[in-house]
Amino acid sequence: MNEYIEAAVAQFRMLLSEQLERENRMEQGEPSKDFQKMDKIVIGIAAGDGIGPIITEETVAVLEHLLKDEIKKGRIELRRIEGLTIENRLAKGQAVPGDTLAAIKACDVLLKGPTTTPKGGTMESANVTLRRELDLYANVRPVTIPEAGIDWIFYRENTEGEYVLGSRGVEIPNKLCMDFKVTTKAGTQRICRAAFDYAERNGKTEVAIVTKANIMKKTDGSFSAIAHEVAADYPDIHAEDWYIDIMTANLVNPAIRSKFQVFVLPNLYGDIITDEAAQLQGGVGTAGSANIGDRYAMFEAIHGTAPRMLEEGLGDYANPQSLMRAAEMMLRHISLTDEADRLKKALDICTETEKRVVITGDRDGATGKEFTSYLLEKL
Ligand code: IPM
Ligand code: MG
Image (cartoon, rainbow, N blue to C red):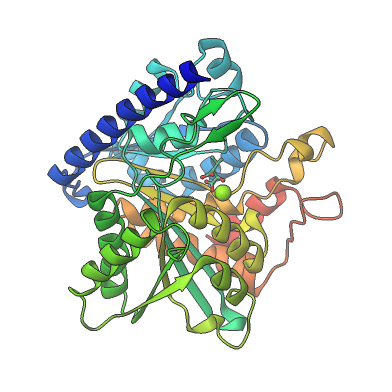
């Protein structure tokens, strides 16, 4: 057993100094881009796996329509990124192959379809790799249910917590395994700052800080403490601590759920609860997700590749709305506010008020293509 313990201790020492270095780098910070001042913006398009290519084609059709003039003028380029497929990633043995990552970094923002994450093994999820490599620390996920008075936005920490070392735990075979969760000061400050800034800019008065600080005392304890330090700079905003378990219950509690506005929370809790919230809105196929950093940003559906749909031959019935909602967030991010508003308005008509073409994800519903034609009519 001793050699395992020694190897684990050596690994832990390395991880600690690596994470400390990351914290130091974050403290330096990076200037953010001013898209309004840019002559040209390159939007990378990576279709991903499973239903990814299908919903990406629909979303690109919408973008090409909406951005016709900007594309013609050369202000916007939609650039295909090949190589983010599971086949290529497995062949190269890299979660995101080096040349693909370089191509992504040559773009300003990325619109990405879902990618397959191999279960077990050592290959990291492409999402996690991209979020880390592009330092996309804020995972922003809005959920609205107008008829229930719900207008939520989740600020999920996106580069640390349970994810940053999720593929680098230690194991003593047949005895025990340990994974690591990391909360840094600079990492927590920047996600909290993003959440409170959003609240301030948008006239929101409630921020829920969601942790399990009663159990994860070091990591979540410090997340909550730092969140309150940041909150002190926003005297008009009420910041309140919640535990993730009761918050999960409260999202389905009609007596209280409509009072929540902005949520800020560590990575894994944010992953789980945003699927719940999306389901309440109408399914994970309806919710978009933005991954924002100071330099890069990536926009995607909140769901996965839906392998079961493809096995059952239901690819054409996959719902592209989540990626279209993500595209709306992308347009807003790059300061194309009018185009974002037009897309939002059309999506709201098609999915909330008029609903003439309804996707169910099965043969009894419309196909993604039928939905796109309907949406284009409303644009
Ligand atoms: C999400 C997804 C990813 C995550 C997976 C695909 C790695 O569930 O974006 O929520 O866990 O973050
Ligand atoms: Mg998830």
